[in-house]
Amino acid sequence: MSSTGTVILHELRGRATRPGNWVLMAAFSLSATVGVFFPGHFFAKGRADLTILFSEMPWMLAPLTAALAMGLWAEERSQGTLELLRSLPMRPSALLIGKYAAAWLWLLLALISTMPLWLTVNYLGQPDNRAILVGYLGSALLGGASLAVATVAAQLARDEVTAFVGAMLASVGYLVLGDASMLGSQFALPPFVVRASAALDMLAHFGPMARGVLGAGDLAYFVLTTLVWLGGASLILQCWEPRR
Image (cartoon, rainbow, N blue to C red; front, side, top):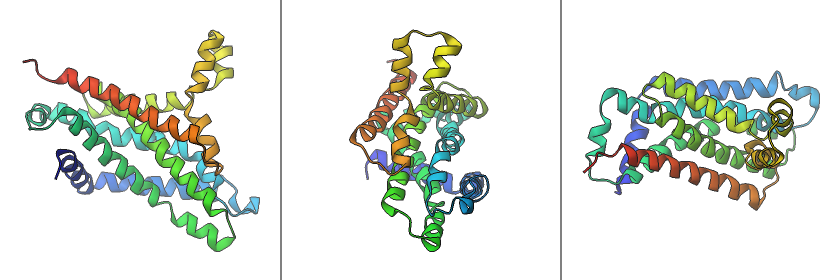
């Protein structure tokens, strides 16, 4: 097995043995259910779909990705095991990708835990299942990009609490980045800054997928955003490497 695969299995075993991770998943699933059937006025709308779920998904994923990212590196640094990991015969990139992939897989499990809602809307009506599938795909991509952003924020912290707060602020900050009206009126930023911020807005690229529209541009945005932030995380990890 490759070193990356070994790291993924090690991280997944570690998460599976911590009750807090299962509580986190249950809380995410419960919040999804409550968000769809109560504040979302699901039955009052008279329409069997999950647009309510996907409209709330970015804000549900922000604390989830922060919680998943906070223990990726801060725990290693606080417990002094980072030096041990760096002494293993593997490249830093394999360590980074393995930790990130394991956290993303756990995020996918959290998304899967909400799929009984999909079965429910099929029982209650005839939803557009393709649109729901695209919504879940978009949620997975959004979660992956948010997790990459949160990973960089968590790397800069020395304890888990600081890592969670930093990752949460980074994730939410990226979500509101494209609010051009707020940026322009409140901060009087130059127009090109506002346009650039709007182009980087995660919500603008997730919105069509939440409505069931799959576009190549949105797919490319999430893939590139994830790769760029993981590249930044790799550079930070390289800086942690002991000098020779």
